[in-house]
Length: 113
Length: 115
Image (tube, rainbow over all chains, first blue to last red; front, side, top):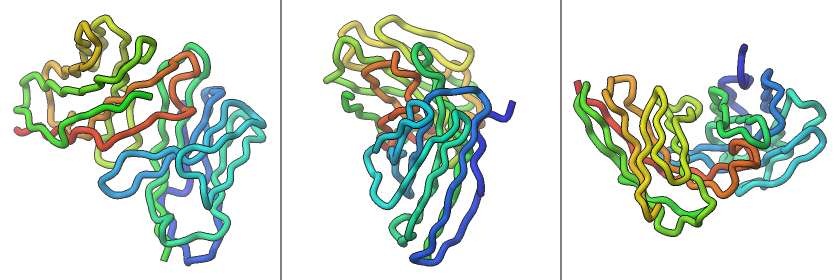
């Protein structure tokens, strides 16, 4: 049971480039989300999804797009990377109503130069 | 979700109990207290949660005051591997699924276990 898997683990982008951070979970969880963590700070919610086909914005959504075409996958797209998006990105999932625990991936460390 | 206040850092000797406080004076009646920890920039890990009764699991105990305005996470026999940032989170509605639709993380408490 792999849990929540994020790829890549590390990425360097040039300003203006686009890329997709991948997140997959094998626990059949309804809820998935993306967070970013800047140095010395707590995690901040970017986007989340409460099921396939349903997404919503979190605290810091600007510059990021998401979609949820399957239960398993929740990719995060950076359309035009900026240095301000240099951060560590975490994906999380949880099982829906009645569940109490969110499971996090190991993170993607992104540097935009 | 109610705001929480935690000390920025704490030390504890290995083998002793680590007691991490959290203030949540504006908590409402149906908000739960959750604790997560993050070890060395890994993904956060769920520890425990509670509403008003004290809770215990294999990792820790959670003591919530009777007025629910504060709580304490207790790691009974701290080891070096417990060195981490501990986050206290107050969450309105646990029925919405465990928090992957949005957990509000503050800066947490950096717990350092000393050998």
